[in-house]
Image (cartoon, rainbow, N blue to C red; front, side):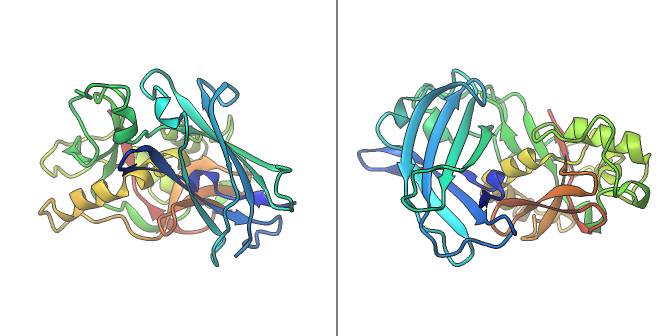
Length: 305
């Protein structure tokens, strides 16, 4: 059986505005088979649903497409048709559900993934709001780092560190690399809760990703000093990817040679996959994969405000 591997990769929330046509969202995903082999240059069937309120909530929009994966197994589509622009993005939370078929006639969907839309493009949100008057914005230098996600009020959001905290660190200590975190570090959206659970198991320390982020206190880059950093969940890393252009621009133009841009490489998330594996996020394609907890990946801390 084939599977959609790296659903979080997918939701690149970029608004494409066309003359006299509704806004669209871009979506990407990497398709792999059950042996983790890429499904390349193959036509697949996809049903896309937008659900309101919960992963099983009311479907407020649906469409089907038959795109073709590229030589790297990547499928890229644009979502948006009749009824899409009528969604009131500011009224509730929304989830994107994709169903995928890989066997002709491409109408029997055997792969399903659901992910919360935490970042809604401004161009879409503006359809149902006269203005967004929050104090903060994506790309702002604030709170010890760079804002990469804000809620609908603009008063709360997420900030990434101005530097990579590590360019190669294990997910947890050797003693626990084959042991599930007690209580689980399974949240796709709450990296703080994951980090707290991981550190409670492995103990305080800077030799592993969550421990390093947990004790991190940033240098004052002109926006204050903070010590409430944590290792982001894979959903939070997806939010960072969604707004990578604004974040990179801020990091590149802040005028401080000590700050570092986000690399096109693999960054650990705090989301656990299994007893011996954890999810990481690749900033090559904006995809999420899992690997051994003993592997070494980049680390960049985040904090909430």
